[in-house]
Image 1 (cartoon, rainbow, N blue to C red):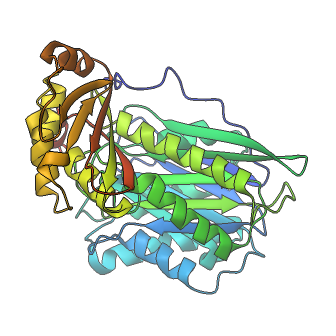
Image 2: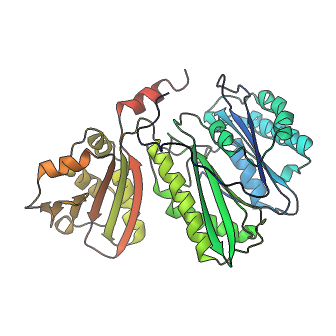
Image 3: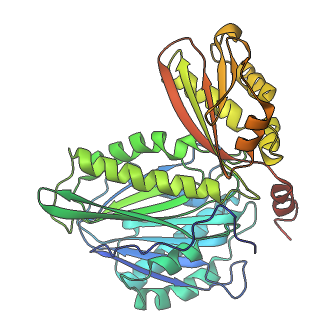
Length: 406
């Protein structure tokens, strides 16, 4: 597999989080000779929050997690997450529910953790029954090999078409004590903002009650994972979960510093998913200002970022600003042709409803040759603003997805 040209140089060194242990192994769900299942265990008292895909055809694991988080979720017991790659256990009817139940029961028996505190996720092909026996036979070995140092292997185990494992971390000083945050993610295709459209797991030793953590996660998701898109397709299996062990003893319920640090980790992971977009060669930031509202700005940004014509022009390094005009116009947001301005990087391309008199096609083309592309659109209507991130659309995307099930 060719690693994305936008990938970081290496997987980052992530700090261990007190109260979190990892294990991973090869179950052979789909892939041969690689790890494809991970188990994470959390100490008693850990608060667990999550947001999930809003797809109407979401998977059995997603429905199970939503049910558990929506009920009375005691944090006095330990908790666990088990994830497999290669099969999404989506559109599998009652068989999918039985697979989730079997996995949860096996993890409960191996760890002593209540089934109500065991969460699962599956990622991969849709519509094929999950061979959960391959997973359950590995659970005892996973439970016996749990280690605080196993996060990089866990990040590799949850990948599907990803070309690199994704990790991020932050440390923040609060009341004289250090609070740690670390996270991993998988995602490369079927990425569109309607929650997270991927699998993301974030761990912290901060102390925060579940309702407050849930509210914070929801707010930060709208600023990060809900602002990225690779191909405009929303997955059936998307899960984003945060676990706070409280081991630091630092209450972060009203901490702006913790919020900022968590936002930074989430945004970094979101950007890494875009940088690993299937076939991607360009990382694209679309910044919209002057909209009637922030919601309208994001609407315009997503219209640009999801346009196949815009994305293929970027892949071809063509500064075709007319396609930006098209995407603004089709968005449904309030816009005025004669107030619109467009920039590629620092290059003013269009203003006052017409091509800028100082615009140079060569200057626009030079910006399009960069790996990191910035498109700025000002609607000239109000104070609304928003930023979304995407990648280009290349022949590589077609190659990957044309034979995904082979």
